Length: 122
Image (cartoon, rainbow, N blue to C red; front, top):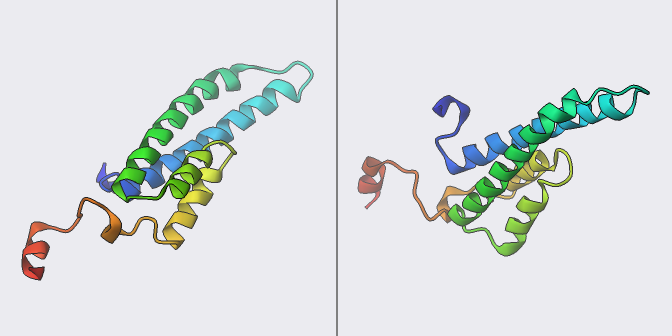
């Protein structure tokens, strides 16, 4: 699963941020088919409602773990959590976090460097 970038904390956050946004899109499309036609079809909401809810919960957990790993302050943590509420804001938060160095490995409590690199730098 390393090809998905799930081998790092930042990669997991990015994966679930995008997945949460995609599930939002599915839910919004399902809601459009339910409410816009006169005789709407609920199947999209029945499918994407629980899917989005599950991914939402996972995103919140991943955001909290990421916050702990990168030692984010409470404002950044709250922004990450709030980004899960409006559609697609998880992706916007992720882009902002990358640009502002919130995924900077030097601030993380766990080092991602290999033991050889650490030994050479000592």
